[in-house]
Image (cartoon, rainbow, N blue to C red; front, side, top):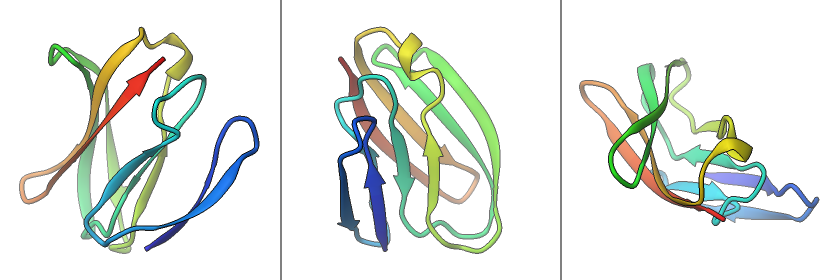
Length: 103
């Protein structure tokens, strides 16, 4: 897939990822960031964000209807403490995770 990624300071680049790759941009995260998940089959999923100790920080249910890639703004980015995090998109038949860091 191809994604146009825009950072908080107006820098942009085009990312050409594989169909099963997840990314966070920018990484490390400062004040805002996006998560992109590659081709995701249609269905209902949970997006979870956990800290480095496995504590659940955020969880939301999302519906994927067209089997294309998914894009999310990472919520509450400014309120995250410095450190490592894992964003996971999952349901009974699918799981994709990506690590990111907050400065």
